[in-house]
Amino acid sequence: MRPEEAEHERDFGSVKLLSPILFHSDLPRDPTDWDQWIRRHRPDLNAVRARLGHSSASNALVEWESNERGLPIPTLAVFLVNRECPWHCLMCDLWKHTTLRKGPPGSIPNQISSTLCLLAGHGARHLKLYNAGSFFDVGAIPVSDYPAIAELCQSFARVIVESHPRLIGPRTKQFRDQLPLTTQLEVAMGLETVHPEILPRLNKGMTLEDFRLAAHRLQQWGARIRAFVLVRTPFMTDDTVALDWARRSLDFAWEAGVDVVSLIPTRMGNGSMEELSRRGLFAPPSWATVEAAFEYGLAARKGLVFMDLWNLDPVHGSPGDRLQYARLDTRNRTQS
Picture 1: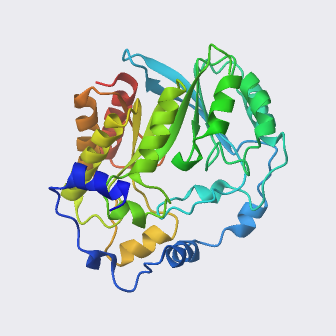
Picture 2: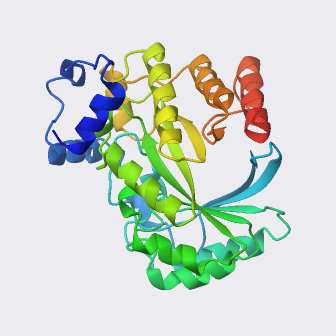
């Protein structure tokens, strides 16, 4: 038995696992074939991606997140443009915002610098640098860019970057060491789900033990840890099952030392999810399930919990949808 299997046995030994038939006999089981299946079902956006440049970020916005004292903190999120992530996760649609080739050295600091100039007076105290992949992927952000990026972070109390757990290593510590002493590093990693059969099918190329090891390293280096947890992954049969595993994933994250959990309602939009929906293997979570997962996290008081609202429409939805959006947004700001 491998170490990660032993962990499943310890943590989830009493859980009745889903039958392999759930995955359908005509879906690939070999990891290489599964990776190709995911890429084959993408909409063809290469012409659009070919026109993306490396001179400016794709977007930037100021959002509000609560701090540990329940006070709302303005956070500037900058969406950097560079090459696609080496992993092809089943549910990911971030590749749409990446280029077909990697950018030249210096392009990422230039994107950050131009965004800060454009949004001068933003008043944000925290900075998110999200590159639709992994910050510590040297094919996306070269190590030679670290000093310039670190210098641009000097006016922020915290900088938040995203990374695959298996890329947490010496480069992470190197970047942390180059940040000003007044700027704390927070690394966001996709945990997604602790379901032992579904996690491998998400094509993340990681185990729960990989996540634990990455979290342990970040703790040793004094960095904060954020985890992304999906609310209703593919292959979950209904919202009751989805809520149960969202709660279990939150519990695992806190046990691993995570400081912040961002809950993400799993969405359509990358081709694979539409195909799974057609087969009856995926449906987005209901508002009730989203709120119940959020309430569980807030009530536990084991760390900050945020609901990802980026893909939820507060304008064109029904009055009930707008009310629920406003309620979730208020909880993000106040943690109450």
